[in-house]
Length: 514
Ligand code: TNX
Image (cartoon, rainbow, N blue to C red):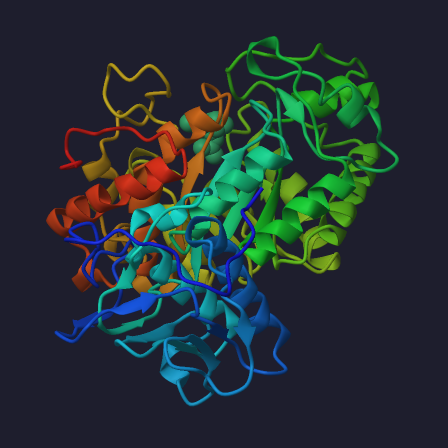
């Protein structure tokens, strides 16, 4: 519940040294260019308005988003105006002549009189607003009233992403996370300009999305999780709520239905999906590779087509992830046969296939995206896929998997690809990581969070902070800006904001926390 906005009179403010205000360059991901100015800072005051372009619904949504973000802590009204921008306003504007910023870039100019964010689209405005949030004192992130001053350092930032695809993944199958927990993670990734959330919706331990005509997938297949807890699933309505919330945060949901392996929950729900016609029991352990859909049965494809059709219909985004990893109980021949049936289904239902890199052996059409999760810097099947024209999404497990322990003593986390320190997560360049895969074939990066050991939001945050922001920077910032000593300092600068937001982060000794 936010306090009533104050629009009519100033209230007392803290005075004295504002040593907690940040420098213009204290931003994650590092912006493309930052030019601080010696001039006086901009200051949000009780009369500050947010100016948004008339007649553009999406830009006005970004203005409202900024207003909602800052009202609880500042208690200012931050009224939206569409006439002539006033002195002291925050001005959001769309400027078609700023083509070199692309869709996602923005230009921010800050001086005493005005803070302006210009972009070619509302996406760029949204990204500029995330930068603004980081430049304000951390207490601006509080959900209860705080005292200013609310200053932003003067100067200019021109910023645009290196890669279009900047993703996080949350495994809601091993442990189920409800709608509010997913929304909370969306809030967290959006601050770092991550624009995709890949939801790992199905696995051996649970089926988490309602599919009409196959009710046991959720009533039975969704009824447990790793360790034997209650599990859960999203109704179509709840899933739509996640998709909509993500969209408000410039995040596109990429649903994953993992096939043909990682399917015990489905096989346990419907006996006819098994080659021997017998339903196995539900599974609550953490082994992988023991389940497979029955490649030779006709019902398998009726099932898969139903699922893909319905999931595609729930997905405004372009991509539908079909898993394809660790199918150790499917022969190579069956695997290729399965994929050759299923890949066209994804396209038939209007989506672009995305899959873990094993599916490259099935030679998906060149529009498909291939997600690399290996730990080595060379993989011939991925290199060949890139050669054929497939875009490659990078989430090398020893760098980008935020489910790995930070060090051997970390209680949470797996360690098959780790342990992975913050520095290890940060110290690589996606453009030259994979041998024989050129920078131009890289769509972007992802930070996957598999949830065998992770059971609630605190634990999600402990694993993701600060490694998720590290991967976010690799996805956004240009290679010249990637610098560990700068990054660790900027990470330290985020701690106060995380505390305001109640984010439970890992206090890595590699970072000079305040
Ligand atoms: C490998 S990565 C898996 C998942 C596990 C994960 C744990 C991938 C495509 N498959 O099934 O949850 O390791 O780190």
